[in-house]
Image (cartoon, rainbow, N blue to C red; front, side, top):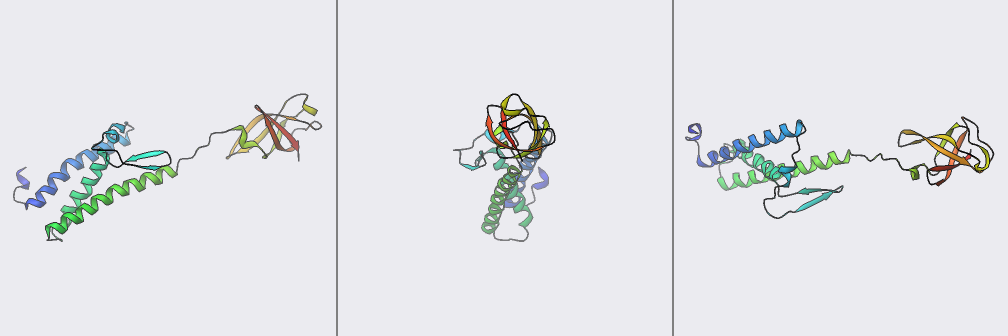
Length: 189
């Protein structure tokens, strides 16, 4: 790289770090966008594993992805502020801080993305004490099953239901009072 020869040794070092780390970061980004599994990049441990746990998902502090994030911030921060900060020790310290900021910014972004995850798995227990409407007439005093419509987490479910009362006709509002196996025990409202 003859283009970098006339540069200050510290600036040249920043460039030697910035070029390969930028290429690797670009490749990681492309693989992430096309859906390629990049778990291999996060599973390579550089030393011992220090984990920060959020929502059952461990973040490995020492991983290839975090090393690349750090080197990006460190090298490009050093290149950007080389002409502004003349003291080499201060420039390296400042660049180190920028690299660390890149890693923790990545953690913060992932944490925000994980907050978007929502578990909408339906369970029968979620219907307990909810109100709904009879869809197919429910026969009296547990002599047969009817159907009810109940909304849980924004989704309407058609479920089997029985009653201990008189028959409940279609379109009658009901309330779930108990659950027996997969059948709801309801009462009219």
